Image (cartoon, rainbow, N blue to C red; front, side):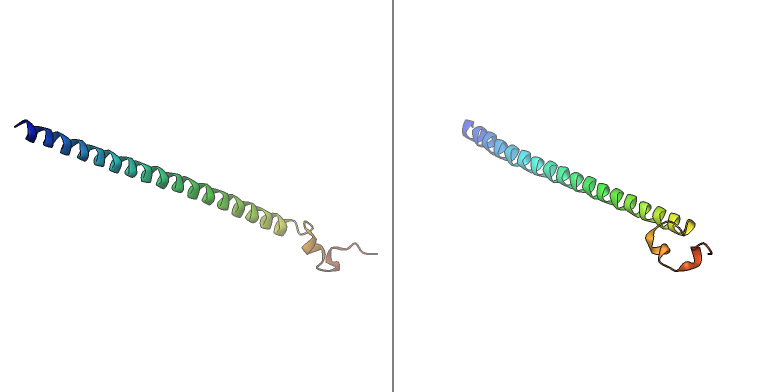
Length: 82
């Protein structure tokens, strides 16, 4: 009787150890996944900020044609007469 009880306790402790290792691995996977998501969203945020700055630059470039060296090379349409 006591041998069966001891065997059951040993089996239970092995299962508990295996369960806690699985739980730790699962939590570690979740942590890595959330870190990956956070980095991905930071990357997307930076990408959209750069895109927004690019569009602001284009808007200023077309709104004020004197702005920038590319439009200054287009010819003498902005040159003063004389």
